[in-house]
Length: 86
Image: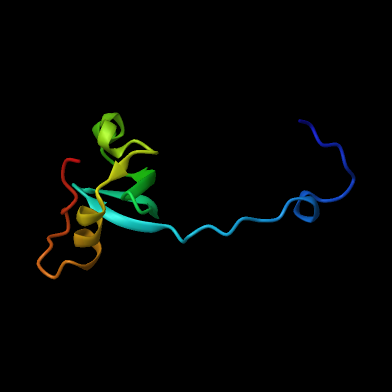
């Protein structure tokens, strides 16, 4: 459906509140995404290694188990590269 209007889009459609983005270390790279009940939903990869962008586990839209994400954020004994294969 196409909507033609002179009114700003923000007046016509309510904005949906999104949870804040979080950044997790993952094997020398950084994953940016959101927590969901199923796990950590990856929305962006930040890395200087071109091979990281070919990995399916870092692909935007992939889910990391929430336990690994929790350990990466809050683990007292967690090294900086705690997000492993998922």
